Image (tube, rainbow over the protein chains, first blue to last red):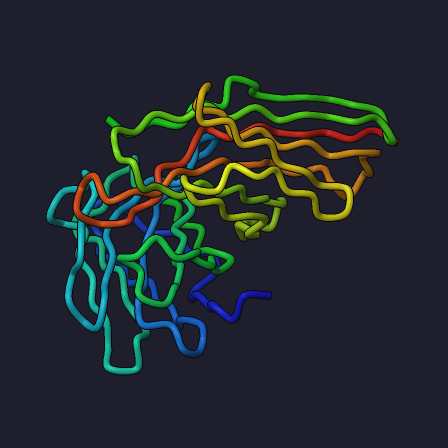
Length: 114
Length: 116
């Protein structure tokens, strides 16, 4: 067990709605990264937060946004949901994530958009 | 550009057989990190190993071993005497600072089925 917790574990949303996913990082970790994993694919980097600032972003549209709080927990928000947003969303935490340190993943949030 | 290729989509072996999972990577950085993760059906990615680009020593951990060869840009993973509990999807990943952020680039994964 990594100590990274995510909520909710499963959820179903309707196209056009908005969703917020939450992540608590491992104790001592100040960097949180979010990944999207579509069925049968490897995880794709969405963005990374380091000390409450966005520290890099993958090839995702602006309707994917995030926050990191002073306790280093984080949220991923997705607006105007599309069917293709159905995926497993993984949160990962690390210490000083810009340095190539190992990231540790939570169990993910399974999102289904109908 | 950064890229990780896991050419084996699915492998089936009988328990106690040895199995090797292949990983080939591309990067222009001289400093980079390579990883293997295991993903059971529950979804959580379980960290197995991290290697930096300056350390080409092979590593063994119990039944697991890793062969890192910079000359062929490969980082292969071998499970000796496989067990049913090894059944999972295995991902190889690359991390470097090409984009300014040490994001991970994952391969598409290899599904390993170990049959009793």
